[in-house]
Structure formats: structure tokens, C-alpha cells
Length: 251
Length: 197
Image 1 (cartoon, rainbow over the protein chains, first blue to last red):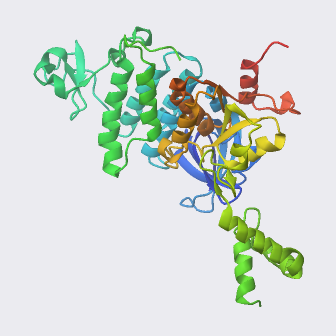
Image 2 (cartoon, rainbow over the protein chains, first blue to last red):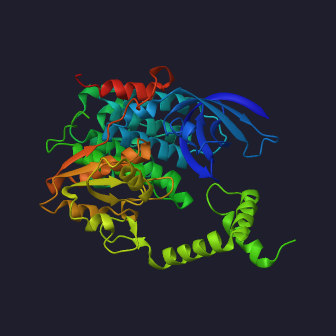
């Protein structure tokens, strides 16, 4: 068995003295693990940082074997984020969620595209928190738990959608939500197509609460796992960098 | 082929970093061949280390005295604390003899994959030490890795209310490094951290 693909480093675990078991998010083979000989050594330590883009070749005698990777750095994306605590928190949360939520060896090319877009945004866009929330929505959709934000679950209306049912995962209009408001999750307008530049008070936190609820209830709790600690730290960090007026401080 | 004592010695030596079964056998033979000059002194040194070496209650450095010799040294600058991930990093800085302040060993980095959270690191002790009015600066000397810098940013946040200056090590071109051989991430970081000459 032998294939080559492009991928992002998700996690690295030392194996023995000099090798490492590396998890990659690849375009055509999904999340895939393999042994990297010398992966714990000095030469490859900088390459095998979470978020880095690599060209990988996987080899094994049988497809069910762990196999071994040879990797070549394509783009050192992690290094560019080290100086910004917020963006680094975004990166570690994204790799933590993908590594824990995505089944192994299941191709998700759309998710790979979304992850690429998120890393591009982390590198140079002030709207990266909005892209992060959209990425988590995309992850939920790829795993079969897509939220229906197109129309109201109660009335079928497509206007004034302001909440999401935590049980159904469907939007609810402001009027229909009135009696149950306390039990519904706020739906931030930027998820309905408003431009990221129009972000208002706490919208990002609302978005993270929305995706966090469904990630937890549909994916992590059924596997007796908590949400990844890195994601919790991202939410804490964004809560602290939100001013009293609710506006995000540009990271 | 050999007695159980020698087998046990080989098995234990093979667990040391850098040694496999074959090199452990060579080391065992070497030790046994120099029983008085090497084996007994080594055994005695190891026994003493096992009995007396422990992490310093103040900084986390390994020493046979409490507090450690660095914390006891009155000639050191109480105004600066250098935070490192492990004792190996502290030793590296001491070898370079460039820092004359105090140290604080975290005992690792935050790592979601390995389930290491803030409560697993020696962070409470650092916050308490940084609150001392004598401390003016905390230098975060964690590694230039995603985990190392995630930990540094977390510490910087926690230290915000302590009234100390928080600084970090520079990232960029290593001494003796040639631009042609550097990865684009290191080059970008170095260019971003450029300074007037």
C-alpha cells in the first residue's frame, strides 16, 4: 500500500526515542495516522508542528496497518501564528476538535478545504473568529449533524431568524421563539450571510456557544469525551478579549 | 549465558535514553570490567542521588538541597524570573552563563492531546512568586513550538495582574544559520521581528 497526498499536521505523539506517531488531515484520505521515523528528532521537530502543511507519502504492507509516513514541509503555517495568542488559540482549538471528532481514514475533502480556509484566515484576516465558527458548522455538517438555518422550524418563515432549537438543530424566527426564548440558542446574524465586518456584540461567543452545544451533544458526549480543552481555552480567551461593549478587539 | 544479576543490569541499562539492548550489554561489560574504578562509584553516586535529589520547592530545579543552590545564591538578581519548561532547559541556560536571575520550572507545557492542563503545571507557584514586589520581570523561555507558545500566552495572561513586565525569547535566524536553509516560517518570524541595526 502506498499513496501520496497533501495534509495538515493535527497531532504528534512521541514513539520510542526518535520516532513519532503523527495524525494528518489529508485531502483524499481524511484523518490518517502513521509512524514518522525521526519524527521526534531535531530535524523534523519544526516540520511536525500542528497546522503545518506537508506533502506526505504513506506506506504499509497491508491497508489496516499503522504504516509509516514520509513528510516534506510545504508551508510552515504554525510559525506565523506563534506571536499571537488569540490566533494560536484558534489554531490549537481547530486541530484539537478535528483530531478528536473526525473518524480516521474517512475522506472529507470539503472539510479539508474548510480547514485550509480557516488557516488562511488565521494568517491574515481580522475576521478569523467568524471563519472559525463557520468551520465548526462545516465540521458538524460533514459528520452528519448539519444545522438547518434556512427557515424557521415552527412557521417555515425565512425572515428574522434569531434562534436555534438545541434539540432539532433548526432555526427559529424571533416571533415563534418568544414563548421558549430562554431555552433556545441565539443565532448570530453572521451565520445567515451577513458580512464578517458587521459583527456585533458577542456574536462570536454566540456562534461558539451554538457550535459547541452541538459538538458536545452530538459528537463528544456520545463518546464519553468532553470538548477539547484547547477549544474551551479559545472560548475563555475570546470572552476576555471582548470589550464591555461586546466588540471584538482586533487580535 | 549470564547470571540473573547481569541480565537485570543489562535490562535496566537498556531503559536509559540512547541505549538499546546491544549497547546496554557493552556498557554492562565495561562497568563490570572496571568494578572499583567505575561500577562501585557509579552505584554509590546513584544511591546518593536517589536518596537526596528532589525538585526544589521554590523553583522546581533538581538539587540535593532545599531550596536549591540557585535559589540560595544571594548574588543572583531577585528582580527577574526565567520560566522554562523543564530542568534540561534550565541547565542549558546555566551552561550559557548569560542569565543571572532566578528560574521557575513549569514541568511541561499545556497539551490538549496529552491532557495536560494548567493544573498539571507549576503555575500557581509562579503566580505567587511574581506577586513579590521584588520581582520586576518574568521572562517566558518556553520552546518555539505550538505547545510552548500556547503555554507562554496563557502565562502572560495569568501574569497580567501581577504588575511585572512579561517578556519572551526572540524567534528567528539562529547564530550560524544560513537563510537559504531556513524554513519559510522561521524566515517570516525573523523578518517580522527585525530591528534597527
